[in-house]
Image 1 (cartoon, rainbow, N blue to C red):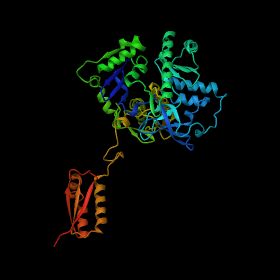
Image 2 (cartoon, rainbow, N blue to C red):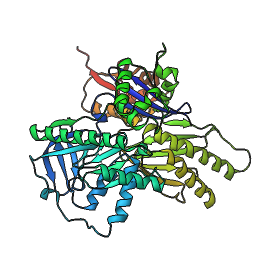
Image 3 (cartoon, helix red, strand yellow):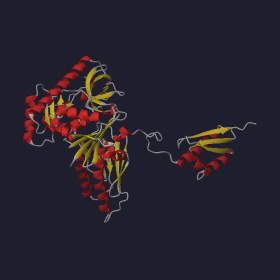
Image 4 (cartoon, rainbow, N blue to C red):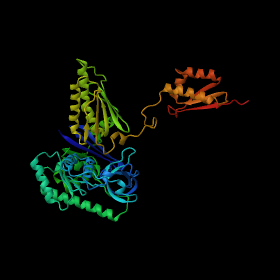
Length: 515
C-alpha cells in the first residue's frame, strides 16, 4: 500500500492529509488556537481542589481552566504509571501499560490518597496536556511528562524501559532494551518507538542526549518563571507529521508552502537526513488539496449521511455523550433472499464505518445500529469484520459483541476534537437542535398566541408580521386558521411578510382606530 502525506500550509491554517493508495484516511488541522495543544508543557497554578471529584482545576493560561485527576498527580505506585501510559495516544505506550500490569499487579496496591493531600489551591505545578479542550471541557493535564522523539519517548517521571509492540522480533526487542539500559545516564523511563527497529546505537545516543537536554531546559524555565506559563511547545503539525508519520505511515511527503518545505528539510537534516529525498515541494498552479482530490473528501466528511456502493447508507449522529451510527438498506433490494441482502449491507457498512470513524476522528462511546439479523453466525461475522477493519486505526478501540437487537457498543480513545466539532458550530437557526419547527406547527402556534394576546387587547384589528413562507401558508392552505380567529374575536387580522424574519419568528400588534 502506497501512502502519501499532503500538507497544505497557509498563514492562518495548516492541513495535513494522509492518503493510502490515493484515498484520504486521516485529516489533521492546526489553526494556532487551543484545539491542538496536546503535548504542550506548562507551569500551572492550582485554582480549585475538588475532593468529591478527586480532581482539581489548574490555570495554565488558556481561556478555560485545565483539570487534573488524582491518578495523574501520584507518582509512586504502579497504578499511576499505568494511568500515565494509558493517556498517551501512542500504540506502543498502551502495549507497555499492559505489560506493566502483568509485571507489577502482584507487588503494588493503590494507595488511598486524596487529591487534597497532594496539591492545594495556589500551588504551582509542572503539567503536560494529555487531552486538548473538547467542547465545554477544558484540557486534561498530567504531572507525568512524556517527550517524544523520532525513535524514543522520554518519560522523566518513571523508571521503566518499554518496546513498541509493533516490533515483534524477540531478538530485536532484547537488543533494544539492553541498548537503552546501557546508554541512559539517569534513571529515566524510555519507550522505543516502532521507528527504532534496526536503528544503530549512535542515533539512539544522539536522540537521548537531545531529549534529556530538552527536559533540563523545561525544568530550568519552571524554576525561574511564574505561573501560568507555556514551558514547552510541541512541534508544529507539519513537523509532527514528519516525525510520527513519515516512513512509519507514509512513503512520501508533499508540501505546498516554501517556508514549511524549508522547515521540514531543516528538521530532517538534524534528525533524519536519510529521509530528505522523501520530501517534495508542490509547485502546481492548482491548490494542492484540489490537485489530489482531497478538497471534495474534506467537504463530504461533514455530511451525516454516507452512501454505500450497494445503495444502502449509514447515518452518523454526534451527541454530547456519544456517537450513534445507523445502518439502512436504502435503495438496495438484493438479488436472492432477505437474510443474504441484510448480511451483505451490514458487512459493507462495517468497512465504511471503520473508515469514517478514523477519517472523522470520532471518539468516546460509539453505538452502531446494524440491520437486524436472525442468525447468530451472521452477527458474529459482522462483529469480527468490524474488529478486523479497526486494526488499521492507531487510536485504541474496544468493541463489544453484537447484541440480539443488532447493536454494537464500542469506545475509541479521544484526545482531540472530531473534525465536525473542529470545523463546525451550532446552527444559529436551530441552536444546534438539528430541527426547525414545521411550518404547519408554527401556524398553529401563531393561532394560539393570538388567542392569548387577544384577552388583553382592545384594538380593532391585529397586524401579524411573519416570514414570507409562513405568510404564504396563512394566506393559502392554513387560511382557515385566520378566518376562524377573525370570526371568534370579531377583529380583522392583516398579515405582512418580512424578508428579514427567521422562519420561526413572528410579531403580533394591535391597531386601535382613533375617532
